[in-house]
Amino acid sequence: MATENFIQSTSEIARISEDSAKLKIESKEFDLPVVKATCGPDGILISKLKNEAFVTLDPGFLTTAQCSSNITYIDGEQSILRYRGYPIQDLAEKSTFLEVAYLLIYGYLPTKEQRDSFIDDVNGRTLVGEDFRSFLGGFPRDAHPMALLSSSVAALGTFCSGTSSVHDLQAIEEATKNILAKTRTITSFLHRRRRNEPLLYPDYSRGYVDDFIRMCFAIPYERFESNPLLVDALDKLLILHADHEQNCSTTVVRITGSSNASLYSSVAAGICALSGPLHGGANEKALKQICEIREYIKEGKTIQDFVNMVKDNKQKLAGFGHRVYKSYDPRAAIAKEYAKKMYDAKIGDLDLFELAFELEEVVMEDDYFSSRHLYPNIDLWTGLIYKAMGFDPEMFTTIFALARIPGWIAHWREMHRDPLTKIGRPRQVYTGPVYNKYISVDERKL
Ligand code: SDX
Image (cartoon, rainbow, N blue to C red):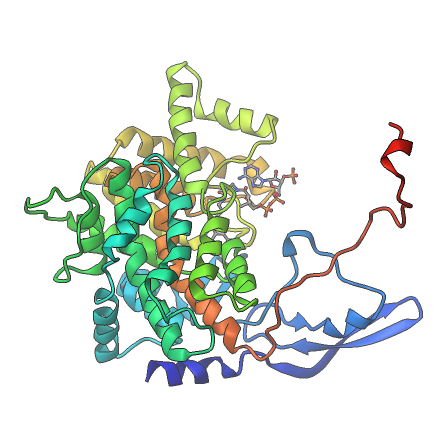
């Protein structure tokens, strides 16, 4: 059922319109087709230039669309984020992480029966084989969890035989649910293994998020009651991170998948891309930055002094700025609400919450940042919240990865359905030596 609807919901991705854009270069004029957007910028299809003497050059793809997509829409000026047209505010308030995962992957909100059957399917795949523990056991306990998570997901396909095909819809469904289900278990293993604690098995009677918190923090054979505020906060943060259109790691998942690499390998590649401090690693960096500010204050300096040092040294404040949001990141607004709830409930290191609230105030009043359209992004708050939940800073980005899994899967599956998809192979503008004659080593001089 879900698969058929999924095919319909993605068949009209590429909508080439009768309009065209005219490009005049020297004496040549090109009529370039336009792909109409339902909202946001239309796309100029430049493929026909491939046989001409030009390529377009756009470092970091600032104004280049690599695909059409029906999944997520962001308007960075208006602080809009919508998954399949649903505003993030409504989904954060009314939905749950697994329901949002269904929406992103299959393209529509499930009926109660579809949702419950999906949850059962995911829960039924939560266990990873005992051999997986010995696979993990080969890594140093203090290895960064993002390196272990990417290795684990790349290896997962070898533990789930027959589910790595990129053409067999049943295999794709299996891989989809395996990755959704098992990355939660693996993330809890990574958290406990770092602490040399016994790994725990899932308890299907509890919800996805509640049981993840139990698998991370419970003491074996002792009754474990999760704090409902922490379960609610984590469920919302997973929803907020579930997708974000063509960000760095999602682009890597699509490009990797375009070579017909399996869903496991493509998601593992996305995890590697997310590990960078300019991307998913920013929440860990943002927390370390707040702790640094606390030391600054102990030396009698102020937050303004810290911000001035950042500006003078042309450094980047972690948790601020965004490639697309040139306004307040709508996710940050919701995450900040949960930071306030945990502060009010006196959960976590209250000093750090107070410093973050004050840092945001100082930055928002400073025209160095506003003139560069630098506002808080979601990473300013998530590190504080995860630390208050009891996670080590090195684990923060693995929780971001856990949340982004449904988005990555949705984009990989859409890429494979898009009739315009080709293997990702960008061009370049070559600026190296035109020709060199080989000189034998005896004749070479410095
Ligand atoms: C995520 O793409 C996504 O959707 C990502 C993400 C997702 O959900 O997948 O939203 C997750 O990655 C959020 C961003 C997390 N990263 C950080 O918080 C790290 C700090 N932020 C910056 O590194 C930066 O803002 C980026 C990388 C996020 C965006 O950088 P851009 O758009 O490439 O901006 P830029 O580097 O061209 O900077 C423009 C100007 C420069 O100043 P000038 O040269 O004009 O004087 O703004 C300055 C930059 O120096 N600047 C900052 C700054 N970010 C940019 N100055 C101080 N602090 C910052 N954070």
